[in-house]
Length: 362
Ligand code: PMP
Image (cartoon, rainbow, N blue to C red):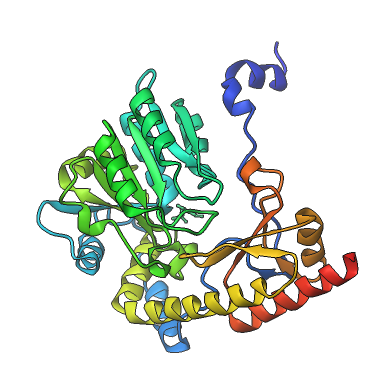
């Protein structure tokens, strides 16, 4: 009889065996500035209302498989017009997977740019799609001719563009993205995970392009723990994707709490405004440090380059601050670190810790 390891080797697809699981570091006792979360809770009175709702929730029952009120609220917030609808996911990660499953067939390509959000490539591997990553230009703008050429060559069934991009923080040139949508034979999904911190969106263009969908998430807007992402666009697309959605992908508690939070959307938007202001201050503080090159950002994080990035990352951790080390990953991110904008106090502690690290390494 075969051993477990022999069976695993035989049965698990080689490309899955070659993957590493998505790494989430232990953050116990650390100031957590690694995952683009909103550092603020909502006011206590609202927390109390949520606690009451949760206390009275019918968790003995399956969740509503089609929470119309919640979807209606989202449609209203986005100003969706007739013929457009909303599909909810267990985080936008799940929606990426749904999209990939829906369009996958032998030889189908999922195309994105690099560096960008790692789940596009990972999910292509999960579902057995061929992944094509087109390198960005050196300043992290689109390499427009190369991207168009890749689209013409590869005829991708699915294109993902993060707008703003993670981990670089920038918005790509809108005209170029429009041309990419027009040149694409397949579906183009604009991933607006960081829309709350950005100056632009493709939602107004939805009606214009038959192959365009926009994906968003509430994770960066104070609800990372709820796991709620959504896809918007033509109901004809979403009706097909709806068939692949697992019936109860968004639980009773996330539905209740998200509805409550969306009824208080202004609270979340004020927090996002605060984070945007603090992003400016943090950018200035980083730029003032000798040896740090910080990139402009339209998201709730900043990417910066620094000599000995891994040493600095470890030094920050020793001093109680967890950020994201991108060094050693994509070659265009050599010596790059990414910090989430926290509260003013957290940002100040991060800057102080960074200055200490730099002093102790000279
Ligand atoms: N898209 C982008 C560009 C992201 O950076 C992230 C999270 N880091 C996601 C999607 C996934 O968000 P979630 O699954 O929490 O909705």
